[in-house]
Amino acid sequence: MSSHCLNCHQTLKSNFCPNCGQSTKTHRFSIEHFVLHDLVHGVLHLDKGFFYTIKELFLRPGHSIREYVQGKRVKHFNYFTFIILIITLGHFIGSISDVKLIDTTNYFSDDQQLLTRFEELMSANPKIVTMLRIPFLALFSLLFFRKSEQNYTEHLVLNIYKVSGELLIAIVFTLLAIVFKNVIPLNYFFVGTGSLILVFSIWFYYQYFSVFGYSKIGLFIRSLLISVIIFLAIASITAFMIGVQDGFNDAK
Image (spheres, rainbow, N blue to C red):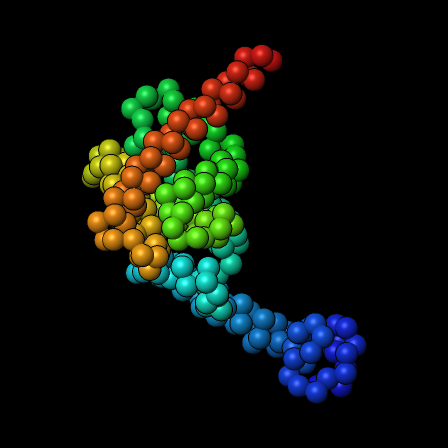
């Protein structure tokens, strides 16, 4: 162990640099260190952060994310990195299968032409389209749950995790549709995905805001209303975005 930090040259008296926080156990790169430390540590860290966050999202979604927002953050995976990984995973699964991830979101409309345009838009800009939804979600939850006194940024963070959970549901149903597409009609998967995402949304908001003084009935009604309104709003916003894109294409 060096007596000085290899990153900032601060004199060391403990296992971590008091100036920059780097560990004093910094080694030269070697095959042994690469395999036994970096690779193993990376996998274990992903298991404790990434998979822990997934587990919490489906066991106690609102409670765990509220704890994260309020400061209990060591075990959770970073919200921004988490949703980018989930979006990338969904896009990859859709790209290698004739059952597309976006197909599991077509429950919001029966208009086949709109669905086709929606799929094209998502395929071209999967990360952008998904991320653009989140500021609207945060605005709605801020308005519906003003009593909680969560600021807008906190609503952004909690809704990033909520959208990540919804995408994971869509990914699971996409995988099921790939396996059972010749046995079960795809419409069943579409309906199942939409229903579960709606239930997840209500459950998430209900748990998250359960400690802020709302009555159980009032909390359930707010959670239901915001989920339904967001559901409809996203469909309208998506249709508007498609219309704008078509207008630009026509102008060319």
